[in-house]
Length: 301
Ligand SMILES: [Zn+2]
Image (cartoon, rainbow, N blue to C red; front, side):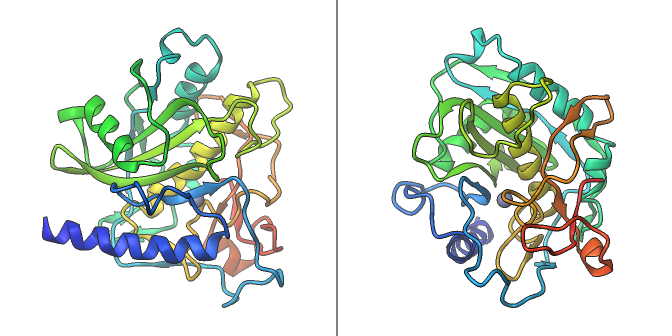
């Protein structure tokens, strides 16, 4: 328990530094009412770039912080809120398809170069289906409430390589973020979770998918999910990979970076318009797509 408390303190401290460097806006309720795990890898609604257009220090590469990565993952999404049981939009079947096809995809492979104390990230991602919980959802401000929801639904089924994203039916309102990922303990097991608002009619995380394949709300959920899941796989307990400014692999190539390909194709044939992910290898060899600062470290397969 003592080690966990220390980890939490370290996480909170780095979250403060992270918030300051990543953006001028911070979740207003993070420090005041949130007593839960820190929000990691926040997908901000508006990302503030350095005023001079350059990073300081200039090397954007991610640095290993000495801890674990996720060599494999087992995903179980939770749709939380009173409207999900009767929701007939494309969002639940769409997210179901997204995680069904993520494992073994080129997009999953884009995060595979990173290693940790427990091995290397691989594209092996199992999908165990989803759960709808029709009780009233909380917003994202209290991460402890999100973790409690995950533990309630997953219970004794919690596994250490579990990734449990929570999709609520609530609009973002004035919250400055579309979603985040975090870590916590369920049933004695450290697990990864994420939180994503309902992004219908919201610019937050919207990849501007005009193909007609997905509703705007689903396309945004998928894009934010790709960001958070990639970050959880490479920086699960805030001791994996992030750069000197606190950015994880999903952050550097996220909005407002250009999205390189019209679509990426998953292993089940589903197609998605997704942001790219940061690759140290691509940057070091000059072979990636440019991020919004022209740094060639973004890849999507
Ligand atoms: Zn992020």
